Length: 231
Image (cartoon, rainbow, N blue to C red; front, side):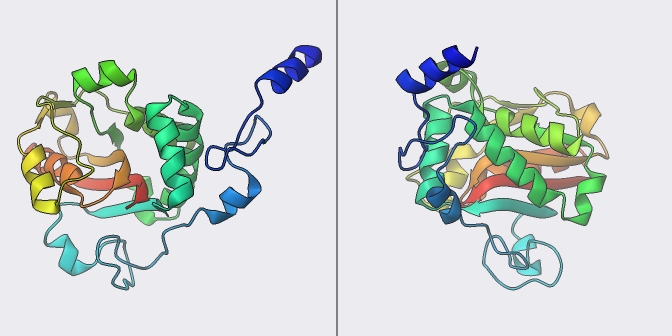
């Protein structure tokens, strides 16, 4: 077994997912790139960066977004962008598990964590999931579920409309793009429950807002949001 491992390491060396430097197979980043990952600073609003004494969304932004709290682990800098690209488009699912574990550590610091009933990964449209082969939000949700000991609810929210990628759209275009894109299939199970929505990157929050409004309409009690990064 050690000989086989040595041969695999020789012919298929593991590389840093940011700079391609050779690293141990157990790692996803070299030491330099790992040090460059930037955590979101605590005690500031995730949307407007105002200082907050308690919570992660300031009172002004809570008027616009139907979330009780939002947690993002990292800023969307270059090393993280490269990692998430490899995760989503090159099927390196262990990156999602690695980052999901970091996000779980962050979530566990906040009091609301103990009240969460279910984790809900943001759904992909069936066409996109078939093309990609997996839903990246489900990989992250799985890591959170294991580490936080909270069950996952899949197939409760369905993405019924195929939407173009949000990457290059402005805020109002994003909101229009995801309008009426989702539906709740099993509304009874979420009634009076506290739910944690999971996605990879938070930009304007349009996708999460669309889903959260739908969940609130179906009598979910609290909606918390978490993402790997804040762009």
